Amino acid sequence: MTGIALLGLLLASAGGLVYARERFPAVFWLLVGLPLAWGRFLSTYGSTMTACGLAVPPSRTRALMVRAVGRREVQPIPPRIRRVGGSLTGMRVRLRLPGGLEPADVVAASNRLRHAWGVHAVHVVEVGPGVVELRMTGYDVLREVRMPRRLPSGPMVVPVALRDDGTAFVRNYREIPHALTLGANRSGKSMYQRNLIMNLARLPVALVGIDCKGGVEQIPYASRLSALATDREQAAKLLEALVGEMEDRFALLKECQRTALTTPEEEVASDIWGLPAYVRPTPVVVLVDEVAELFLNATKRDEERRDLMVANLIRLAQRARAVGIYLEICGQRFGVELGKGAVTLRSQLAGRVVHRVNRQTAEMGLGDISPEAMAAATAIAPDRVGVAVAGDASGGWSHIRTPLVSISETAAVCRAHAHLVPDLPALDPYRPSTSGEPEEPPEPPPFPRPRSRP
Image (cartoon, rainbow, N blue to C red; front, top):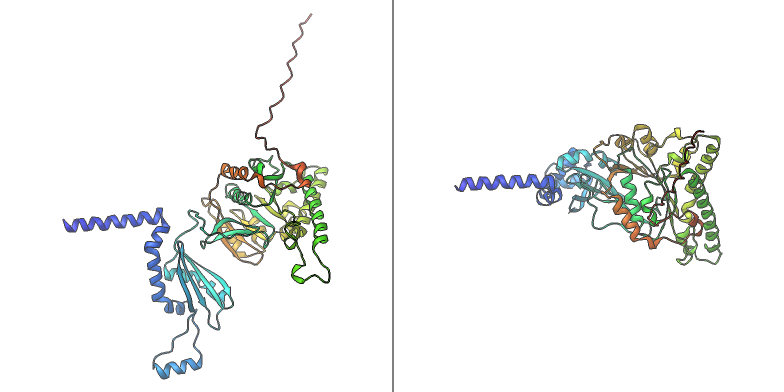
């Protein structure tokens, strides 16, 4: 009976561990995965580094001392461990590279390190000259997105998604002012935009929407929008108003930037963030839902309007960063077939987020950043809705995934923060109606009575 009870207890424990691994991977990692991975790392570190080609021969002086004192074989020198720590999602190891190694060598061996230590993935981040950090994840953190408790914050820092190394992906508009987001139908692009709007709504910024699909994507957030264009004609006028607002802000910046010879260097302002708070204009984020609609034309008049809209978009992308106007361009497709100005506009959008797309759109979005990132975007499975490849002009990229957020949740946040809508006279004519009641259609005229034949 004791043996049967013990066997039943072992089976129940094994079943509980399997259930926890599937339903609660973070708990399983802390209880089982982290101790095992930590033990494998500490016991096999030297041999693993040597096998992966990450150990260098010792200097001649050190080799002579080892032979003279220890009378043993001289071993290659692996990177020195500076710090080892565990977390809810994995492990972090900081290494000091010996002479002869560079971070690219560790990146090339990351897949072999993953198999050697039995973790889900190994990401290499350079934190200083000769110092790298191995960010190991114990399980697929993108399968069920849970944002970290401690999120980066700042004047224009917006957490949007979760990276595949367990850290938060943020949109820092002061570092990367303009971005391009692409994704096919049912790829998660709209979910990314909802997260972005929901977090921007909590900040003291002006939100401007351009949704040429009749406003179906952005009308639910009208209570927090300073301006909204729902067709091409309104979009052309709104972009022209934004260019005028940009010129007015440049005039204000020129007047207040204090470039006198007696002004200290640290007080000279090159953008609005160097101005005093009582003078600084409110930042503006322009959200374009479907950029291809602005490039299409059907008639000669549409072609002229298209050229004007594209020119204004390019002008904003080139100059508006200094005066606090930022662009978030979204679309299902973006390629050279859109016509004149597409490539020029793309070159000004340093931030890139590409969901599941075809090869042509992936090449337009990520081809100038990294061929590996482009291949990763085309390899996203259709059932991985919300997974995207995020990159920037530096060439770095990573997989991200946005949390599930409904339209009603985003709209509720926008209504709760409607008091943050700033006073911008140039955008008042384009302020969307927030009455919430649809207009009643006019009564149809009565049908005329048929006349009787004589």
